[in-house]
Image (tube, rainbow, N blue to C red; front, side, top):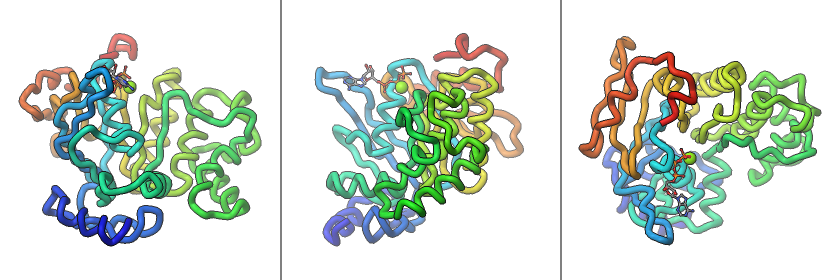
Length: 291
Ligand SMILES: Nc1ncnc2c1ncn2[C@@H]1O[C@H](COP(=O)(O)OP(=O)(O)OP(=O)(O)O)[C@@H](O)[C@H]1O
Ligand SMILES: [Mg+2]
């Protein structure tokens, strides 16, 4: 980020607790101490007039593990894409790891993504015909790391997700759960502080989904901030915080009460009707639980 951009970020930073990161998004870590993600009055209106996000405020603090829930079309993926800088808001401010995204050009945004954000999607998005090791190593392509080192780190990342014995397997030789663990290894091979997952268990059976969740929880345990979109109420209720969306707005934001006594949901934005949907873990199936 240029000196001018840093200065503007300092002026525009909406959170008085933090100061913006310095250096370029591709190198120095954000060290301002603010939330790892801040959305401030963020709206996203698509061409044709669909308001997918309406005046959204959200802080995600370092080291959190949270679920984003809500009915189909409520704006969950749009919000995750905006957080991940894959999409720009129509209005409002987005800070990621203390960088004010609005001020970054496309090259700087790519650097921010490459160094700070890992993505996992429902459909894995692995390169067909490419061994797991290289699929993961490619996650470091834009980090200026040599091929040998990329592959060494990829082997380590695959080991971390329990796939040290599948390095040479190609996607069609892997189960769904294994494919998703390869995708997670690729997302975290560069040690990003933030991992964004859009329905990571949505295409998996219960056992494979539980294995993927174990991997995500392990990453959270070692300090990664993890944001998970899910339709699975039981899964969402098992996480320390749930953010509920409806019609492009955050309608509830809950955290486990101290001591884990249950889920306390605070209405957000005044329409906290989704609160009751996120009480104690239920026994409904994934299909029944789909919001
Ligand atoms: N590129 C686009 N162009 C126009 N409208 C879009 C676009 N992407 C999303 N939308 C609309 O924005 C709204 C929010 O979509 P989004 O994908 O964020 O929902 P979601 O909560 O992730 O839903 P789901 O649970 O089905 O994945 C929807 O009404 C959708 O039709
Ligand atoms: Mg979606």
